[in-house]
Image 1: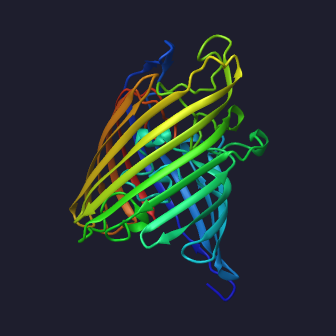
Image 2: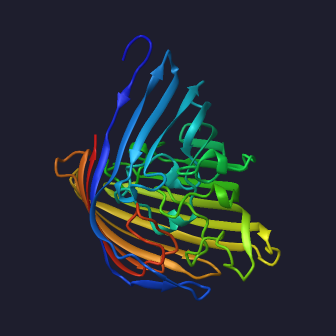
Image 3: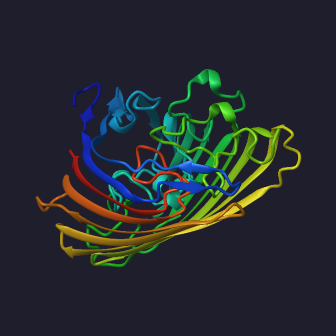
Length: 384
């Protein structure tokens, strides 16, 4: 730190052992097509993340610049990414930002990463419904004590791994978030999941999110992208697949709208947190798309956790379900976190998932599209 600025540097990395040999080797989608499922067993340095942040010339002008890699998808688009954003802070109530940032589509995109119960993997319902990272402009702040908001206008649902020549010229993605923490006016470090802090007074939060986006086939990331948010049906099919709905039908553009509502309670090492999702796909355009009816899907997730040994050992149990016209999917997962140095920064995580017809997945997360059966993985995480 000096007279003209400040720079702060962090490192996040983890090693993952993944075992998907308990999954069925194939699945059949709603339309009767059979797809193979890769049953992986491997060890990867799954992610390395280097954020740099601070202020320049005035503390009101801040920057957050980062690089990340994902070894599991090396050689594919999005395996190595550079990005960031700059912000100007007028006051607590009003701040303006420009650059790559997370669309505030669900609670997990509010900026809690990596303070989740699992290591760098959301529940399947959250992954299915949410948006991701895009370039845009956003306003955010604390409207009154304990009430926070964020509004963002961006290029699309996910620009990671998508070059600018493939984007449409509409800037037609808008996302909004508001949350309220009525009892303690906070909800733990970065508002993360679980009660590592062991609140001695009941901490509560409620939140709401809404996103609208006009999505184009060409502006979607690759199927194995590090932040894949392909617009899928509840059987895992990508809506832009030619001849999916019928021979000769090819969707070029679709309107995506999604809302979610969440709640959370933390007290003395225990937490109970949940979220409900609604999604609408409409206004399909392309070749012979006039017969495609609007699609309405919904789902939820519940996460519970307890600190068995303060600052050291946490156990958790979670569940999720995705419901829609083209099939249903669900999961149950259980896991533990062991902070073996009795402080955040180094943790060992072990997690078991039982999947039923997962409609979402890609190489960077432990579950594949169509996953049906059991997955086990362990992670050693350094968050410096």
